[in-house]
Amino acid sequence: MSPDSGHVFRIHPVVRPYRTFDGNDLHGSLYTLGEFDSTEMEFFLPWHMVMLLPDGISGGCEWNTSNQAGRLSVVAPNAVLFNPADEYLWFRKRRSKNQSRMLLLIIRPTVLNRLDSGELDVTDVQFSQQIGLEDQIVCQALLAIQQEMESPGINSRPYVDVLLMLLLNRLVRCASNLSDPKPKPCYAKGGLANWRLKRALQMLESNHSRAPSLSEISYSIGLTPASFSRAFKQSTGLPPHRYLLVHRVNRAKEMMKDHNRMLTQISLDCGFSCSSQFTAVFKRFVGKSPRAYRRSL
Image 1 (cartoon, rainbow, N blue to C red):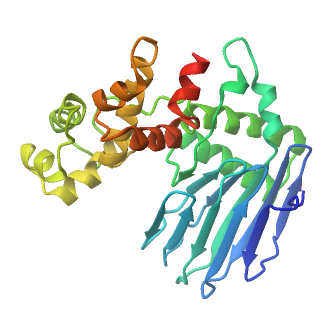
Image 2 (image 1 turned 45 degrees about the vertical axis):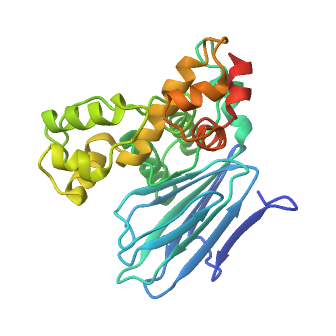
């Protein structure tokens, strides 16, 4: 597979893969990124892209998408990035103490049609970018593909094909508009105790006119803002602010089922300051504007 005109697939400095896999719907490459290299990658493709960093990156990384930017001082082993078709991603690996392996999968979007069933209409699926996708099943599927590429076994191609279907099915569940990111209040190792998590969720979900500050929430459960943010993400998989936005978007989706409600009023009732903010946040998480989403109901 090679990018069409107008699309971008760039790795600088150029790194040649040490293993590749070519199928009808999937192209996989395994790279080794040198410890002293500062490697830049840029993607804007008509295919879905999934990246696995099995060794992490001790020197950290930086990234830019079409609507956000971020950096990490250290990338944990088995970190996953998911970039849907026709989304922009720039990623830079900083210099590190050790080499870093990278699995890069390029997936043809039409393969999603194979998941079409009575329960799932694939035309409804809108994937969302995930920088640091934390899902054990996605990670296990990618590690199994990596292992098969490094040491192919009997029926290697059918096996990778099964893993691809598992991967796509899971991405629909955890990285699309059909996922349910709302966490269950339960204790996770390194996360908040049940009573603290319950209290934090109540504060985030109950006041729709004003978002509570990190200081207010952390003070109410006896933690510092930094400790609360870290433990909350460990418990829910989402930072507090992102959790709040997801909650408000899900609440708005429920309200839209009543076609007598005006979108402007829904945006205010869900805690958005104005219609433009509501539209931007809703499209970011759902993949379509509030008006387009309501028309699809």
